[in-house]
Image (cartoon, rainbow, N blue to C red; front, top):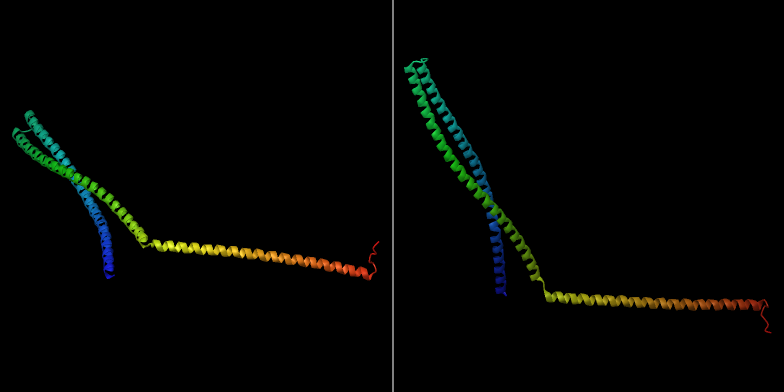
Length: 238
């Protein structure tokens, strides 16, 4: 007997362990989804920041190119004025040289800004791809979580039903139904018996009443005959 109890306890432990193992993935998935949402938020923030850096680098490159063109144009103007005699040739050459130096400096700055822009845009592409992967994985995990929750619900419902079915004693239930049927049959027979007794009682009462009515009728007839005799009203037969 103790062996069977031990086996039953082991079965209970395995059942609880199976349920625990089924619930753990749900908790793990929920935590994973929370972590992934946090990572997604960080990635979106980083993406916005890197995009802003790429935009600034592009704007800086454009501004530097514009300044480079402007310095070149100024150098040309200086040389043209010197050629016209509006400016000393030596001074014009010096200033034009300085302008060309500024032109080259801005060209280098523009090239560096363009390099930075390309680097930032590459980072944007990588971050964008990572975000798409995160979103896809997040959606997959959320669907997986729904499936796991449904499986737990079905498992618990099935377990409850099976437990109820396992506790049902079929032979005891049949015996109980038979006893109930027998009891109902007895009650029905008893009700019918009371009905017959009631009908019999009503019949006897009717007979008694009828006999009393006849007796009263005869008594009244005898009294009338006695009164007629006293009054001398007795009819003489012809």
